[in-house]
Image (cartoon, rainbow, N blue to C red):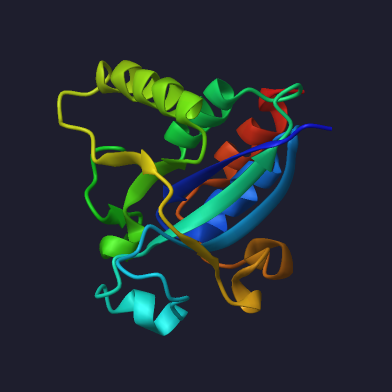
Length: 170
């Protein structure tokens, strides 16, 4: 099986990871910290200071024969407020910014087109970064699959969207 990857920052990474795992065709997810100011693995405590420049991000590995990036992005957009700068739900700070970080230049064009289409739905300017992935470090083990281990844990994404994700590409 050939796989591709995309990195999505959508506020707290717990919810974004849990949402993406519901999609048929997603074969792996890892929560972590992306596009920071230095090439040293940060800790959660360091990221929370806002001084590292890292965003809470989910590495999404998917099978493009089963799930297209365009659908991943359309569904991702449903989980965020794309006009909110450095804030999603109750999470506030630069580490909670929204972003699409790509490793394949072809994905850049698709992501930029998707953002242009999304912008037509809003009067406010979008605050979603679209950049190449500069760096990514997996978060601590206790953050991985957090909402699977703690089903009642905090999440800014509503339960109705998790149902949408499960049904979106069945």
